[in-house]
Length: 490
Image 1 (cartoon, rainbow, N blue to C red):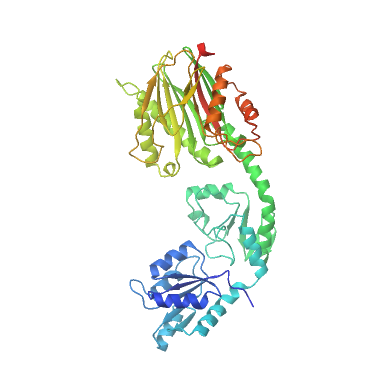
Image 2 (image 1 turned 90 degrees about the vertical axis):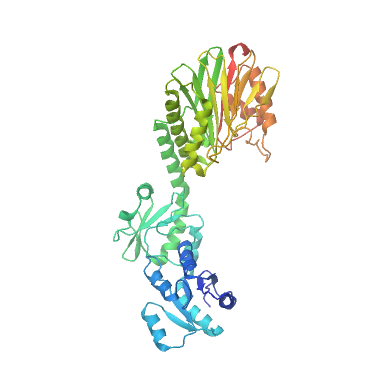
């Protein structure tokens, strides 16, 4: 007996009792999705794979016949078998429905054995080549294929294999299925065309066969095995992409410094940006000299992973630099740190892409001779200390992009002899010692920061000393900081 359990039937009826009966009768044969209106059914057809449609003919708002017309007019859905359910016994009605494109007709109330027999009969051809289906399903677990052939959906493909125009946000596919004979590529949006050109592994559907990059042609029955074998090359492709990205990051003109050191009056300022795994990440550092000779320092952390976080962090830096220039050049107005943070948050909230991720940011403004500073914070835990002790600064501020009604506090002060300030990202406290599931935590980090200050402050060897002290084999996230200390304290 052929197994139909991997196939899905969509039952559409405004009568809830009928839907429950259909679910009960078919639950041991196939998966059953139920909807109470034609409009809900159309949404389901756009969101998931459906292999057969059972639809009532008489429904309010949109009839079953109108649903059939919509299905047959939609690319990628025309092939789905459509069976009408109706209490009308007239032969002319049946013939008109079949002529309109329906595959079959069932009279209500449905007879259980006839319902199951007809569903099996229409789904049985889709269940052929079980070995092929299992191979494709296995490949679909770890393989993301973007299907640009709207009228072709091999049965058994999992949700990981995407349909036309439904590429998930933030996902770069492993491969693309396309057909040169249609106009799919010309219909793509600009960003989709960029993705199409970027993906190396492209599979062309040519005369009913799959043409692989090495010019081999495979019949449809071998697609599952082909995708499965391609999984073996995925780590290699991933490594190649990493190297290409690493080279691109090095060439970009807006990449922040990995480490820098400044002198302002008696202050020494040291910035360090250590990205996870040697790849660009979500932490960013920046320093901008203002027209009055003062210096604006920024440290931020985009709450994302690897490359995606890096691209977002670069967008934040672009906003930040533009705003700083605009505010610092306003005539007859002193530079306002609060105004800068508030405007930046407003811009982020308006940007639908950036507003989808949260970002912590800390801004430090030091006057030209280093005698005074201003600090505005959004989500960080800055530290202020001296040679004897260290404490965290409880300065409230709303994460960027969270709400238009964000509020921020400002701290103003001077660096007394022996004092220092450090603003670390969370990568330091959230790292783990070797063979331990316990995070290092804030208090042990504070003790290490204080000891570093007593030993003369940080150097470029700080990450190595940190890893040795806490027995960390590899950092689990980006780890950066800004460190400000008085020369007299060293």
